[in-house]
Amino acid sequence: MKWTHFVILQVIIVIAISGLIYMHNDKAAIVKIPPKELAQWYKPENKRHVWLHNMFKLRREMQAVQFYAESKQDDNLDKWSSDLEKHYKKIAEMVPTWSKKLDLSTISRMQANVASKDYQGVLTDLDSLQDNCDACHIDYQAITALTYRAPDFSNIEMEASVSFNDHMQSLIKQVNQIKIASDDGMTKLALSSLADLKLGMKSLGQVCNDCHKMEKKPYPNKAMQQTLVSLEHNLVNGSRKDQGMDLGTLAVQACANCHGTHRLAFGIKSLLHKEQTFAELVKH
Image 1 (cartoon, helix red, strand yellow):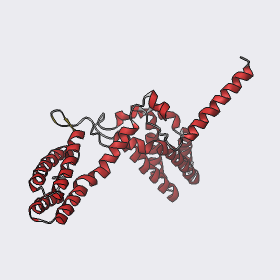
Image 2 (tube, rainbow, N blue to C red):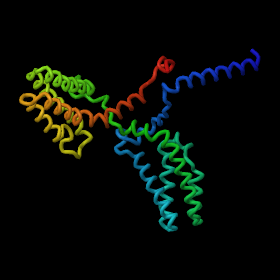
Image 3 (tube, one colour):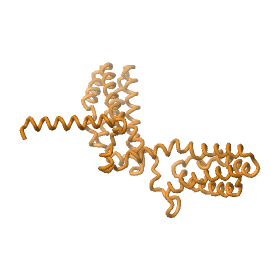
Image 4 (cartoon, rainbow, N blue to C red):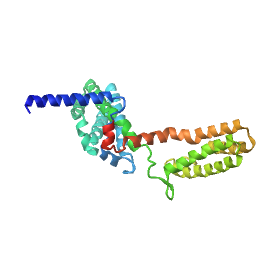
């Protein structure tokens, strides 16, 4: 094959692949996954969210440097800029693969401008550093929070051989069974399903306590318990409208409010970190 033919063939292949990607741009999203070594700086591999606290320090130090550069207070400016340099460079120590993302020339220039009392230069350097931080945050901030701060329910067992997901599915069935039995006038079945729902919610509350340690009874809380009492009363004595209102209120209190935080975050986390087979990639 002649060299020119080879080059033309490569160009055709690139154009074809680019065309396929463009045709499917509404069916796939590109997400950058943070390096696995970041996990050692988050729970549960670490006792504390060390990476997160380093980010908090940087944000506070950048604000302090701006404040003292604008007010031209040399002593405090020197102290805070030194701390900023230390914690900025710590990023490379914690995750070496991200060292190339750091703007070390700007942080060094800032220190020189602090020493020479070039306050405007310090503020200009600070803007450059902020741009550097923003560039990484755009790529990684949301996905990192989902990866390391969203709860993981996949390995939880509620009881012997009953997974967390199976337990949640049983709660959904119980809520729907109450509604079905209520609509069809089967009071005994509605009440027995409500009794099962109460037991299931109580078991679920033990899992909630693992994280919500500061709350006396996070699940089922006082409002949920009041609704359960009202629902039980209305299943016997109330109208179908009263039963429906209680059940709808309970669904919001005991299901939707928690799902809005935990189920969405865990679902996206699981989706983003799912191992894709070659067949699935080709399909996309």
